[in-house]
Length: 49
Image (cartoon, rainbow, N blue to C red; front, side, top):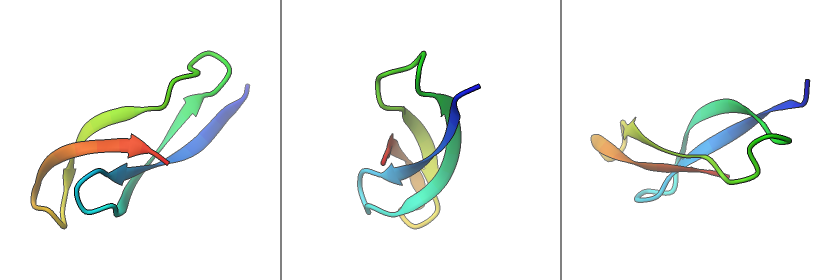
């Protein structure tokens, strides 16, 4: 199964806070989730790097 680990970066402070796995064969778009950033101290959009 071609699951790869990707890192999620905060769009506000540009820090890499989270890692996630996704199937790159089935999902060709980049992952974007609203997660809590402990440096910004609020929920921000985190995009795949």
